[in-house]
Length: 509
Ligand code: MLC
Image (cartoon, rainbow, N blue to C red):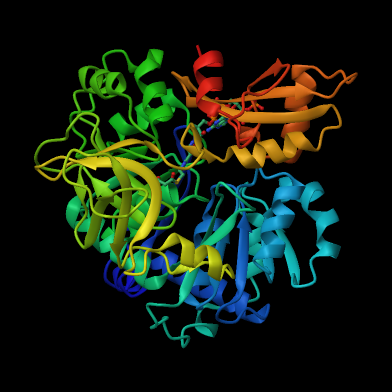
């Protein structure tokens, strides 16, 4: 499994650099595989002393830093469950995740202390919250100081592939976010599949610019490089000129990003005259890659982007090939070991080629279900084990798949999923809001922009800026509307359902 393989790498190439932390373009910390193993063991010893046992949920609300990497690996290696959380979550969202997952131990950034402290009394399952900063890792070093790697060396590696090791919260069209339970077996199957499909190499150098609290940055990028025994350059913050500088000067061989980031690279003044032809693999995912960006990236940097498709519940599902045709507008072919089919959304009968239907996926990569949500888990799978992605697509006769929209009401902004019902619920709490409908309007930079169409209560008066600020206090910033449009009434069908397609065609212009 992944953790066994990583341990082997640490033992066989202890001198090799595993992770470098990079601020702007300067390396501030460097960790070899040998040091990684020792610090992960020390972290395991600390976690055990704090009472963490297999199955416990341990949340990480930390920025991108080494402490995150050590904790994440140590939690999984102890048989516990890592729960990465966006440090930008305001108190209410954070409280929900901590409560729903019955988190035992929380590691939070010192910067979010004021957000977190008031919550702690309301969380009976939470034994302790430990604030660690990432600047220089001093607090984390002090935390580990009383423990030795030898204290944990006898802890056996997890052996049950069906044990949950990671939980990623995803939302849906109804209800609150739910935790997708990913197992050691899921992670390993996905890594083995990507290792083969993308030809990961031991001498790869990955430039890592994505957040670590989503599967793209965590499983596909960081785990991918660790599984290959490669080197990760962990940029603490993406900045186009710095990223280009590192891609060329280090030089890097692998880069993974979302379309918004690729767009920023192409548009950066620093991109003039830059070639990335030396790079082996540059992927795009988490949102549809616009055709014009695909073409511009190749024209500009001399590299054809490799577009792939995945989701939190299933890891990576489809990918254009490393060698062979990278088809514009297509998300490619099923990854090794992954079955993909297109079915009629109503009857679930398999569709013939070239006919649009729901994308369904089956394989060892697919999560075992949603945390303590047996009904939602049952609803997500067909009786014969296919996972219903909620995305629409078609299969071409030569096996390439193309996405054609979403069956679910979902907006993707800069690679982050935004579920309109969550935003509508937040708006509904404002006393001046009688009704609202949240839609995604196409946007060159972000892919889609969150737009709220609002009906005000009679006599109430609220303006756009105030409503945006109201949402920002309740939701992570990327979920808050960028625009609010006031209307007298929302268009509804005879059953009372808001006609969002009409709103999109009227207001997205
Ligand atoms: C930041 N902002 C966003 C945003 N990201 N708003 C909408 N959508 C987003 N994605 C806000 C900021 O908080 C800021 O608010 C303002 O927009 C401008 O910020 P910025 O400095 O320009 O943004 P930046 O911090 O540079 O972030 C942009 C980004 C980031 C593209 C680097 O969004 C990002 O890292 N996206 C990747 C997301 C990702 O990894 N998704 C994977 C999900 S897994 P203010 O207050 O200044 O107005 C998945 C499965 C799969 O989907 O298949 O991969």
